[in-house]
Length: 380
Ligand SMILES: Cc1ncc(COP(=O)(O)O)c(C=O)c1O
Image (spheres, protein in one colour):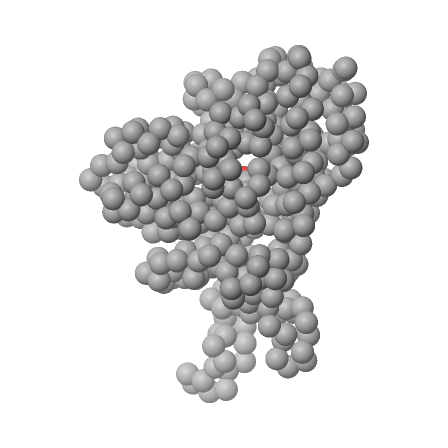
């Protein structure tokens, strides 16, 4: 479809169901399908391999990311794990040095045991990226903005480096969602999401999505999805599809609320740097304007001490102190003790993930209530 984003989110891959005309894609709660005779089936044989509710979701996300093929998984990490299984033992990955702690744990503690090697570099520095690419490099793996420091990498520059070196660029687009950023347009060949976050949007499911525009990669991902079996159930596929329909309106409000909260935090004299790509003070503000269509709902900042972070986390009443992000409700997280506990302390120190760092996922509540909540928890 060449229609606008919201139209595609509501219709792509979601034709009315042919038997009854049901407007919503049904939850096909089945594990298998009757076959007429040997070798005679409808295209659906077994639900791990093909599933109509999942297929609708996969077609919709492929369309929204500007790719040709989509794949749904039981979690974001299952999606990442499956993408990494495209590699062979001995292959090398250049990965960002600031990324979700669970992704780092998967690379460092699990996949390295199967012969994959990783170099972690600051992806803002294209010279370091080029220098890290070697004979056996197959992938550049990027998050932008990063979790939790909100650093950006230049997708167009990384896309060109990947193309020159004959390696694939993989981008975790969880923080932006397909509404705000489409890495395939900049040269990525694989984009993935933890759909647990903005795509699901209501903190009521765990899921992962992968999109590619490469038919060879798509064939191999379909094989892995079926051979390893990390698939989501039909209820979660339905909920994810339902959530996609409102992604654009939710993201607009996330962006508007986060901009106001970030501006408030930035003007407080007792808070240092506020990491939010929409602020004029954000060092990569120009790049943000170039490759993102909005600045998202995530903010991080350093309160300077564990004591102050503890006071804020214990004091908030509208924000919920919890892991995860991207839901309608605002969440507050302390990366060192929560999402990034698996990152070694030396690396955390290098990146600025200090004991005083807190991360806000700004939700869809009335923004005045969110600001008042932070103010009462921190003190004036
Ligand atoms: C940027 C990012 N990628 C991937 C994941 C992993 O996704 P999941 O928790 O759905 O497995 C997360 C989870 O927090 C994340 O923040």
